[in-house]
Length: 212
Length: 212
DNA sequence: CGTTGCATTGAGGAAAATCAAGTTGAGTGG
DNA sequence: CCACTCAACTTGATTTTCCTCAATGCAACG
Image (cartoon, rainbow over all chains, first blue to last red):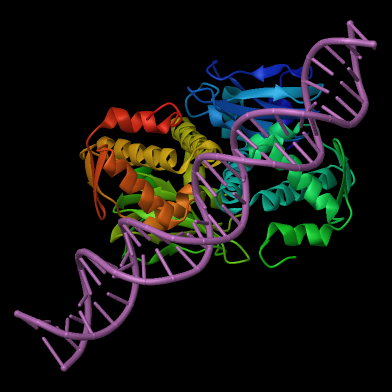
């Protein structure tokens, strides 16, 4: 992963709300998040919009653009952030002489596909509360990996963005938060989330029908 | 693409209903469909299952397994089929000496990601009828590319499998078919589908609210 | 201190799931 | 060849879930 340093040409700061890239513009670089967080979203002809992912430190954006050499989504900073530009042509070139780099890159792309399949499963077969539980546990997991608390963190995105990602309306997200709080599984104070009972939250992910 | 011939070691026949690979088994090869069609599906701990994709001639399976070197889904033949085994290690090896092959491979993986984002959009923001219209048009498109009729084809999968892919119950799929038939947009005779009005079917995809 | 954006909550309605019959059609065996 | 079986499909009635619309709360900011 550190080999990526050879490929990384320059860093770029990006303020909350700014676009990192826009749908339809020419693709040349991937972006690795160094600090902060971003969301990607796709826009349909008829105005419908959907958030397709949230990205934190260390995660890679732009993989979708390789196929057409045009970005297929918008990437927007959720807070003041910093990214590394990874020129894709250069990455491919260097890959030729460093097989392990190429292999790692393939794994990263593959992981993105697996991740998307997980979201498809969520969108296709889970109820609102299960979706939110899954989402919170996923975030929690990713915070832990980065050395933050698994059970106490601040959301960087709005209810509407969460809803868009989970295929729900913002009111439904809000209600699901309230319900989990009423059951004492989590504490919600606006964007500040505390998970009180990780196990019961995990149960929520599974089969809501069996739980009380 | 023909370069792939160098990598392809052997063909494999697989009968309707048979597994091409199973979740959890060791990954070594990708599979290119030569004839027939397959579905992939993921199984959750609690028994929930979801179809994550349908694959036709020329399409590539197994990309999700690269990340963990273990297949993350089941692949099952929808009809008697034939696939080529593409040993992944060999593909990576050859890529090193044929940059264009590597580049093509990256595009294929990227296209899979874009495709998944499309499904996420469908699952997250479309109503039943819109989902089915989108699905039929996608199939139609893929048949055309392969030299078959765009407006007259046979489904290889059951209503339940379609529903699982689209995040709907089989009854809902059936009703959506019936509705599109009542509106004279398509003809349905069990698995035999005829599209009478491609334009109105496309309209269905978009904003159902505006249509009658 | 009003404005603005985000969040919560409630009431009512629409969409899809669930439950429950029936129908059809292909394959099987008498 | 016909009855039987079984799986897939269709259709209707009811229930659940979520969306929509609307009102209100609340904190940040100029």
